[in-house]
Image (cartoon, rainbow, N blue to C red; front, side):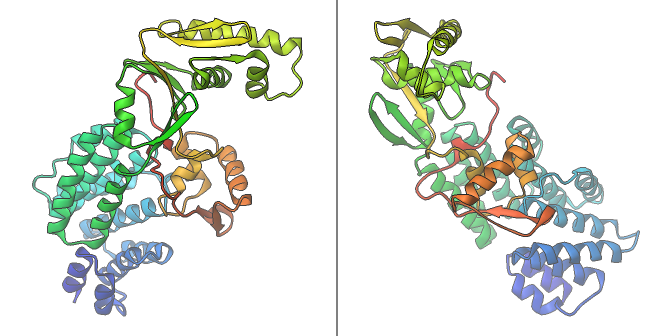
Length: 403
């Protein structure tokens, strides 16, 4: 019965597994019941059962205990408990590898890579994934490997590589015959064919797919990238991520290209005041001077009779790459659109910001009716429905080559 239940879980049939072990309280039965409850989405009950199984297994049953720890780590990832220490998972992976359980050891490794991808540590995720060889693994794990590779490629804006990886993942998933895995791969294909950003040139605006974003960023057009707060041209990047006033000026000037923007308009939009005085005009001159020095290699900021204008050097046009949605807390919404429940601490870790800052954003979004929460205290979780019609790839945090 234990073997039959395990086989049912391996093909994604938790109800079939529970029919065989629902009344068992021995260590293997507890472990399989915990995994079944996790597949059904009851993460709280699953954690309790798996912890009971770890305690029930004897000291000589190291492999079984390690498998339970890996299952706990998978539940933590699914419930977005990203602050969980990884030492136990690393130790379990080492135990499984030493005892010859290559499949579960690889599964533990993939859980670690998925966590790194969620919190935006792409370099580390890519290095770790490169050290995992999917060739000798079961079809389900080969599909997982390619799915993670596609996720990294999408975040890197390598759409050709992402499509190829998803194609390999789809073929492996068909052999594995696990519906949940196939559905996850299908959702990734949808992201590649969903508008991921907006292109603004002058007063014209149109949506862009991810491969169109990639083509834009490798062109000779001067791009003011509002997704990463950088100015790009022919592969050269000038980061304004830590200079919000300068980026706001660049955004306003690029939106008016090839025309200019009046001084009063710049002061009103950038400094958020309706009554400009001489101090605002003096500050504008100082900030324009700073922006002019930073952009000198790729663009010229010149004074006009009415205000200031942006002129690219060696580029045929100026464009703004804008976020797919106009939302003050777009990055928080982007993480919540994966249909999982997040804690504020996990969101802060993934965004690389303070938990209090995230909490203020969550409160604002909740007041607007865009998200909802359940639970209290440390158990409080936040979630929302996906933003319809937009991919969230460019809303997610990612390191730039110059960082």
